[in-house]
Image (cartoon, rainbow, N blue to C red):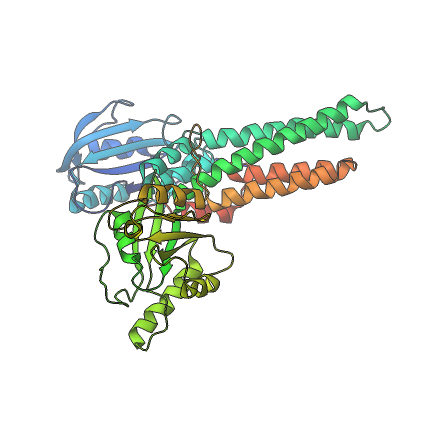
Length: 448
């Protein structure tokens, strides 16, 4: 079941809501039941609701600690659903700590990580998927990730889940009615309605899962390792993709001896590119350490770019490297130094020709990278999704697939529908274990 709202005597909490360090503006946020008395003590009065009030922030002796703007949001029309007071003053750490300590001295308690957003969830201001998107919006590293997080915060992901749940409820009602009246003759129309409804729900669920997977790529990014023999241009390709000189480039084999990492983005999708040491037999102990790290990196990658010399094609050494790559990891063959071919590039079914020196083929490589990781431009945008969302959607899929298997056994069919609904409800928090709430909100910053 959905978590209950906070009791009316819940403690008043306070925290600095802006980032640590110096800033032009700093915000202390207070939420709870004793806002009026606290506001009178700090400001001399309770500000008019939802109007900015310029005030001195007073210490226990009535002397100003700071000057700034006070905003008062009475319950239930606030972020947390409780009375909320925000004190917006200067962003120096000493000043903010003085204002915060004054609030604590007046009876407020220091907020725990994510406690403001947790209270918003408990007071039905946000569902769990929306609450998680708050921190995703804060942590977004690309503009596309930020837009996807905002879509989830506005409730688009939750709305898609609610549509699925509503359709499941309607199907369950039909099935329960068929179970409750076994003595009645169930005509073919009811069976057809049942089958059509199940098919529509499975199709909608697949679309929602596909969209959520795209959002997961935006949130988590993808780890891409560049592998190959020495001197095929791995470091040059890393520099070309990143647009800056992040790796040393040399004609001397074994120049790269450690894994060099750089984050790039392609159409808003973050990719963690890892340049590894050239794979070969070496008598150099330090180089061998780099080669071993390269192999470890390849084992953890989501995608491997096997870089080859276009002027030589696939050599026996390249084939040996290809055989050593992790079997379950997707790979993309990239033929570098295409400028040496003079435009006479052979047709290779599963590869792309590039020149890290001239930039030839780099745009095609970027497109191939997105294709290899499963990225597709979504009409209307993606939902910002987490691993637990994907697991819940996949679990619902399993139950619906099993429901189709047991169509002729109405009791089992109804139970699979119930389990599918329960899995979907976990996403929005309609059914959420308390330990999961602690794990989710514990990852937030204290002021949020």
